[in-house]
Each structure stands twice: as C-alpha cells, then as structure tokens.
Image (cartoon, rainbow, N blue to C red):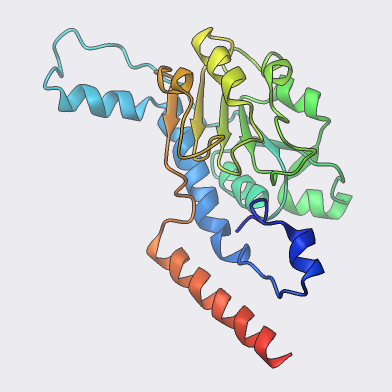
Length: 235
C-alpha cells in the first residue's frame, strides 16, 4: 500500500510502470487501529494472559483500564484511513481533532466531524493519538521524545501507518517511565526486528503489520492490482 520501500525516482527514470492498491485497505486498517486502541485501553492482552495462566480469582491484578467513550481523539494524517478512524470515533461520541500540512476546507471538516490543530496542540489535547501519515523524509521520527513529552500522562499512542514515523526508542522510554499510559503498534522501525526496549513494556500491544490481513481486504487488493495491470497493458 505504501511506496516508501520503492525508489520512485529510479522507477520513473527507467520508464517502469508503477502502481499500488491504497484504497483496498482503508477500512481494515482503521478497524485494526481501533482494535489496538481498545486492547491497550482495556488491557485485553494482560487480561487474556491472566486467565490463560489459570490464576483467575487468585490475587488477580486490578486490570483497570480507561474509557474510550466521550474522549478526544487526535489523528495525525487525515487521509483515507485517518478519516475512517474519525468515523469510528464518532460511534464512541469522541471529539475528533486532526493534523496534516494542509487543513481540509470548512465543509469537509464539518462532514468529517473533525477540526484541524497544530501538531503540538493536538498532542497536548488528545486522550488518544492515532498516527496515520505516510513515511517520508519529512515524517521520519515525526513523533519523538519531544512530541511524546507533550502528551498527557494518561494518553495512548497508536501507530498503524508506517514504522519510522514514531521513534521506537523514544517511545519505549516514554512507556517505561510512565510519561504516557500505553501504546499500540502494528508497525515498527526495522521490522520484523523489534527494539528489546519496546518488548519489555507491559503497557504496549504490538501486532506484526497485519492492518490489511482480512480475507475480504486481501481479495480486494488482488482485484485492484489486476485492474491496475489491465489498465497499464491497454494504455
């Protein structure tokens, strides 16, 4: 779906046809981002592990999480997936704020039920921060130690976009020091290798880059690729 692993300039120089399938994965990726948020907020992996350990009812940890309903969702990158996340946030009666370089016009913002904020302001206000921006030279480590320090100590960060947009080492430090409450990741830097510091954080839920991993979505990706190929061959 992303193009960050391709040398687009070299492809263009050689006259190679290039296409990809971003539209097919929008809803599945938004679903997974919300699943990660729910998993962290309600401590579902910890609860599952506790039940499977056979210790349910025996000195059980409190496993107290946080509500999603009525909170403020901050979305960094408000393209197809970001707007799909905003639609899901509306079902939880959340206030939605977003950041990207170019704000939507007033009519589009009203349709999406979202308002534009500067990045620093969004990080300060949001209870949950969703990262949904592509990985480019300008977005690499867009969320680092300085940005994490602006977030609420009760905040949760979710990255279901691209590894590298978030500085994983800085995130591990913020999680272990309690500077933010938790994080959910579907992507990491240098995947499939994961920084040991991240894996040591109990307030992290991590998935192996499965944003598009539903039967329906993978089928749509294949069909979209076929349509792209037929168009290229007929041009």
